Length: 87
Image (cartoon, rainbow, N blue to C red; front, side, top):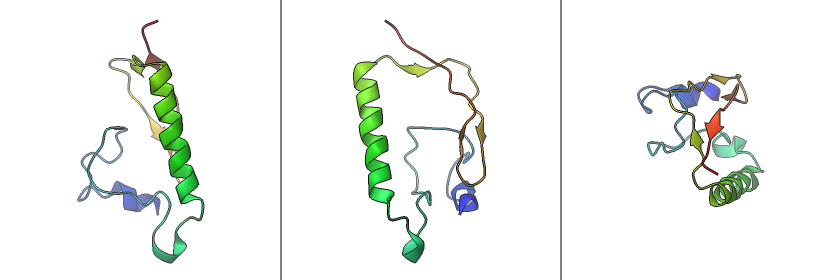
């Protein structure tokens, strides 16, 4: 399923981390009869967790000019995520 999320005909620069990406859906929880039963819970954990994080640290942002490298085949994620915020 990983390759489904890398289709350049559907997403602009699919390997780039863009948390504001608005185009297309994704196949992170599979599709059709193979859909993950924990999809709803996983989506809620991410939505609530990020909302609370940004509510507590409103100026949190990626460090300027910092390259985010994604790795992994089945479960992709950043090797590191360097951020900064104003106290």
